[in-house]
Length: 161
Image (cartoon, rainbow, N blue to C red; front, top):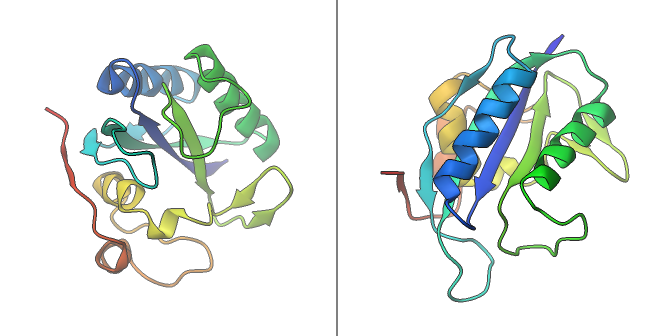
C-alpha cells in the first residue's frame, strides 16, 4: 500500500458538483486513508479566451493497485462523467483526474510519468494538496509545498462558494 495523490478539475456543467461527485466515487472506491481538500475556484490556465473557471481539488488515499490499473480506473471515471477518450489538450472538461504521485515511486512510461511532471509548478494542485498534506514532498524534489507554492506562477484562486 502507498499513498496516492490525485488532482481533480472540472469547468463544464456544474464544476463544483462534478468535483464533489468525483470525490465521493473515489472515496467509495478507495476508502482507506481517504481525505480531500476544499474545492477552489481557479482561473483557466493555457486555455482559449472565454473559458470558464475551474473547480479544483486534491484527494489522497491508500492503494496497492498496480499504477497502470489505477490510471485505468481514473480514466474510466472521467469517461463516466462524459469526458471523451480523445479529448484535446487544454480544453474544457466535465472531469479531469491527474495521478500526481504514488508514494515515493518515480516512473516514466509512454502512458504515465510519476510524479506528475507539471504538478510541482501548478498552484491549482499545490494549494489543495497543502490542505490535506502540508508536509508532502514530491519524489526527487527536496522542497516543501509552501516553497513550491511561492515559486508557482501567479493564479487567481479562491475557495469555491
